[in-house]
Image 1 (cartoon, rainbow, N blue to C red):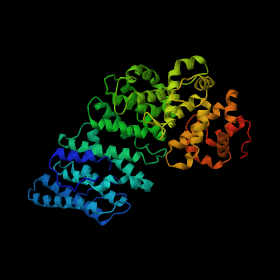
Image 2: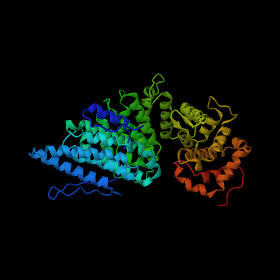
Image 3: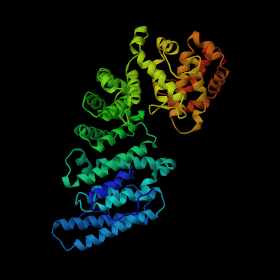
Image 4: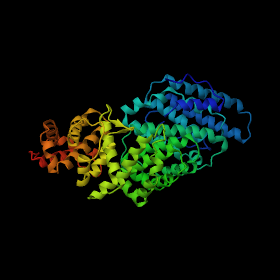
Length: 513
């Protein structure tokens, strides 16, 4: 549903209502400069296409800014010109809705938004209707189609949006140094930026060095959260949600470690009076960091395992009901985070001390497998399966999980059969869709079953499962699956290697390639 056509707003309450509905927008890396001596038009770099409305609005905003500068000097006769120019700008922003939903149209919206924050707001907080109107343009609510179709546009919008956080008055806001009269508008802008970044993070494919130049901004965000973590500020909750989304991209974890995330997350976990939802967000980020070897190492070096254990009873309270982090959700997060930090040992004492975690991981996998979408406690089945893959390098853990761990809602005769059949269900994961969770699940299952196949007592169950054997052979003979090594996490082997390893252990013919 779109917002109705904009009428100039005069109250903060009305402005806030627009932002409540607007959960996303912006665009390319631009740098604007004003030459006070020759009144040059701002230099915008780079923009793929500048249509007439873009250029017209850009020039109008620049001239409007120049009028405001002159007004602030002494000249009061310019007031009428300012009013007329202001209305002209509003009319042009309204006309954006007449354009098609294209990346070029969005570039106009982003340019206006950025110019308002960087150039207009520092001069005066009077003309907030520019902000309200540009946020209510319809394209703001139709961006996902553009992100889905155009990967380069998606990346451009993400980083141009992230760059807005480095604008001087946004930095002042994050450091608590902004002018009091600008606080409201800057909070609106911050909310928009955060939600835009979160939306894009579900569509963008990040690369290894993408955040190398963003670490200073990440540190600034951490300090902002730390200074306001006890306040009931919606911005803090939004930031935590964004950081959860971003730290789930394991390729970015080294940058988050360099920015100091480990220290802050552990510091916040030790604060007993934080809202339960914030504690849950901290555990979630803790788990995300621990998925990467560097993250688990950094957490262990900072005494993360002890801190996690110390807050066990506070976090795992079955009597707490929370919309985002209920007991089941928190318990699964806790068990996965703990498993990723603990180095499993080859003895029964280790299993005895951690059987509750092993039991819960297995049960969560079973429960997720019984759901049509393979989700349990808001997590895809790939999450606990990947964790179990790490633990299945130890024989005692394998034997406990397969022979002793109690399970509910389990109709099969054995757990070996369960994992074999689950692999069969995910055999089309490499071609079914673009969701990386399914290929990751398939990769982890191949690794789990490879570990199982090293144990003579389970071989017959695998050898007599003809559909399982056919599935494994299909992948073992198909060298094209080696193209999917991006789904191979630490402590895992590729599907091709694991499939051939299973066949070797089962005494079957294997690929000669």
